[in-house]
Length: 113
Length: 115
Image (tube, rainbow over all chains, first blue to last red; front, side):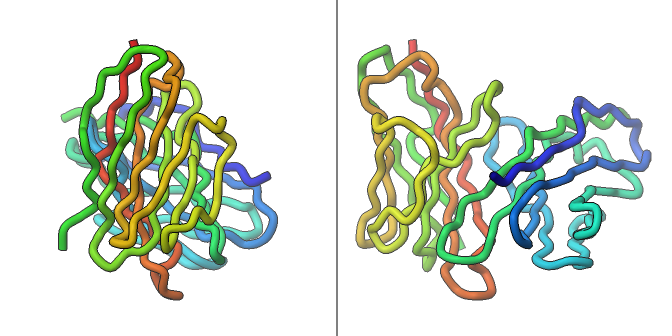
C-alpha cells in the first residue's frame, strides 16, 4: 500500500535557523504530494503542493521539491520564525475519483526566540 | 469565502452512546472527506462522499458511518462508542474540477472525548 515516512520529531530551532523536515514516500504510480501545517487547537492548513516530478511547491518562505528518483518531498525554510511553531504533515494522494490522503506521522516544530 | 465548518467543536460522550458530527463544506465544493486523528494512529482516512454517494472508504468498523445531503453538507455517525474512539475528527472538502480536484481544505475539527 501507499505510505509516507516523516522525520522523527520534535524539532527545536532558534529563530532565523534553517529548517529541513524530511519526507519520503512509497506508492505505486506517481502521486501528488502535499505539506499541511497544524497549529495548536486548529485543523490542517495546506502549506504547499507538487503534482509531478521536479515540481517545486512554495509558500510563505517554505519550499519542497518533488524528487521521483529518491521518492522524497523534503520541506525547507531558510529562516524560521517563532510563528512557524506547529506540527507539519507530509501527505500524498492520487488523481482520480478517490480523494484519500495518506499522511505521515507529523513533525512537531518549536522555534525559540 | 467561508471555510469548512465543523460542529460541534467539542463533545463528551460515554461508552455505548452514539454521536453525530456535522460538516459544511466550502461553497461550491462537492466532495467531503472525513479523517480521524489520534496520538497513536495519526491521521487516518474514514470515508469520502460526493453527490450524496460514498465514493471511498477507509479501514474502520461499521460503527462509523456517514452521509451527504443534496447541499453537500455531510454528517458522520459513530454508534456504540468505545474509549478508543476519542479523537479529533476532521472534515475536508474539495472541488471536483481537474485543476483543483486533489486539494482538500480542512475544518478545525470536532474533538470527541469518550468517558
